Amino acid sequence: MSAGETGIAARLAAVRAQIAQAAFAADRKADDVRLVAVAKTHGIAEIAEALACGQTDFGENRVQEAQAKYPTLRAAGHLLSLSLIGPLQTNKVKEAIALFDEIQTLDRPKLAAALAAEIARTGKAPRLWIQVNTGAEPQKAGILPDAADAFIAACRTQHGLAIAGLMCIPPADEPPAPHFALLAAIAARNGLHLLSMGMSSDYATAIALGATHVRIGSAIFGARAVPPV
Image (cartoon, rainbow, N blue to C red):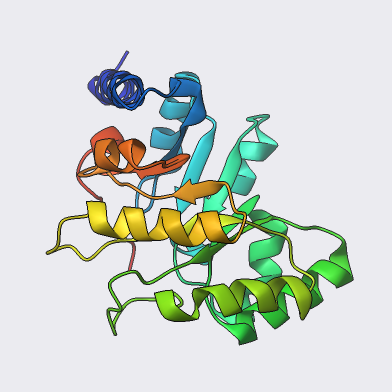
């Protein structure tokens, strides 16, 4: 076994143990929290190492990068679930629906309309999440918190979309707990039970506040690789 395999296996085991500990501390079951391994900028071989350790849920930020990796893995017989966790352009909706099992970054009416049209055309409906910009950061994607209720309703009624849950990325320079609590409150009043929140630095806090999915990259795969030019 190579050093890389040992590293990923050990880090993955450590993350799983820490998820179980955080869930226990919150009086929850470890199985209530799904680990999404974020493999952006990492290659097929590294993903295969995680698959060999029983990891089946993966996340990617870019449609084009995911297209270069996951069809090959699936063709090799690997069973996996793939989530888009980065911004989605409307001109990539066709490719995204063909490739991803979950899209966690629905955040605007134009995208909702494009997703609804492609789902109707193909009959393929990935699980959809709405991204909420809990910190109202102008540079970050996501519907603003005070517009979230109306947007959720519009996705359901105007576009006929089944919304599974909410996702957020708190501001890097603020404590994450208030943002996780805000996301949970929006979800609760809209009858949504899935919360994708928490990354490598804050997932224990997210689990304490109700996360059902945590998105963890560097704690599993190590430092982010340099993306291809």
